[in-house]
Image 1 (cartoon, one colour):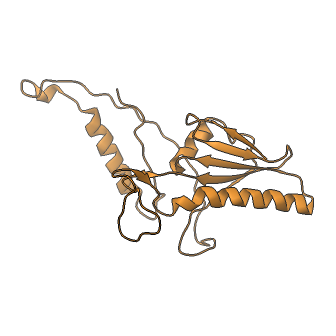
Image 2 (cartoon, one colour; image 1 turned 180 degrees about the vertical axis):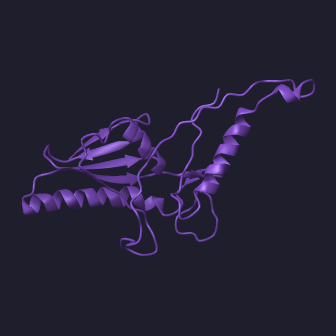
Length: 187
């Protein structure tokens, strides 16, 4: 297998590839870390390694390594049983960052992609529906106004963003499809 880094995310994503054959099987892994979750290993009480530092939450420390091991296991199994195929491991610094890999065309030749999330049990949730990613882009423009002299002439783009996000949250309650939002650019 060979390592190919820097697919996007400025050299923070990586992919491992087996031999050149079809079908292309992608195993997805994350190695994200969140601020304020730095933690000394093996401690149940809060003991940050670095105050305010990054750490893993929601068992995400397992996603990258276990997915990489799964990719190696699938590659070895294909080889043992004589089935051709190409196995790729895609590591990503955040789960939501996979959408950036999709936008960059990294999965264009992939036949199947497999992902997972650690939980309290091992298995597939039989009632779970398959979810897809639909990306919507919104642009909001405001109008500046003096807060003391003519506040009624101003229009807040931030208010529009917050109202839109709140309305989406209300819409996304079960049984509707959940959503995640991100503000990518401010001017």
